[in-house]
Length: 428
Image (cartoon, rainbow, N blue to C red; front, top):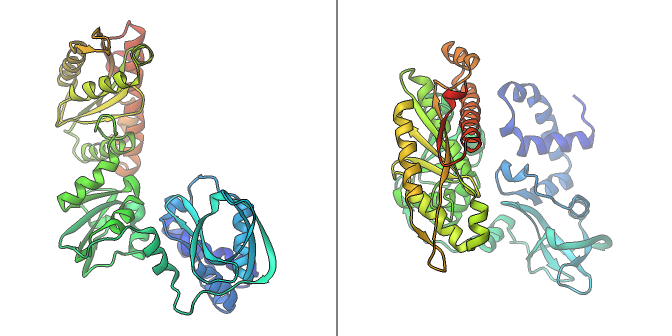
């Protein structure tokens, strides 16, 4: 199998960074090209060295993010790395350009960084690529870092907060199954480490990481945070509570929309495994909330949002979807029970006596749409569920449809005059 140098480099990078995205059958088909690419890259020391100095430290969500990066700048920096040339950089906040020696090009979380030194020195610094206004390749050979310089060790010291040496004796993290390959290839440093594969784990679509002797601290939290909603700490409780704060809406302490969908999807999968299970979904929208904000100020609006959140039962999973919209999951609830709960919430919000800065009571009401699983799903989707199709595939369809039904019911509540509950069942 013959690959051109450019093709070899492309397959090398795909093997290094993208293989965790690929279905198993594609990996089998591409493995021969991957092997040949690795052989060719390793046969050219300058290319292999360049590859080692271009590091993407965050997981693939960050690598493949749509965050804008200056492609021409990155290409010039990468070229300088390959040919060991100095670059002339015009940097934000600096009035004149300066020469810079590149030691490495790094992606960390959502930021692209360049590590190197100024002029004829080899003391390393970190610059943000985003702040590079212009860059030019020079004919000057780049100054090399000190012989004992280690890029990853330097980044760890520069980009992580100091942590204690306390070790967690029982760490459990539940991951979405599409992270399985990545976690296997980028395991935590631990005294003991075990992964329960998706096929053996009791929650479909997930897998479990268990570890003992993991150093606690900011580096661990950054690693977990990089997976966003695709990782959930189960133990220890202290770490779970810290990490969950990132999944909470700052104004109401309810879930964010992304975290709520993760919880809802798990509830859907639970119901798909047990045909006797049901749940209700409420979508709330505060009536004329923009006017409340405009007339009374955003501080009062934040007070209203917090008060509305307090009207939701503590044991119901709820989220704020930005603005004035909320959603609530009601597990093990049929249509009649869900309607009683929705009316209770609506009345409780209506009965609030919130005073603005002038001491006047501002009336607040809400419109609510209610959908119930499986009653309010389309007939075709119910048929698919009855055929015991793939749960992972079905859960996505159910989530999309149940949200749509509740949203349509909410729209109907607004059309009928607001401050009321409408059922999706009445629209079918």
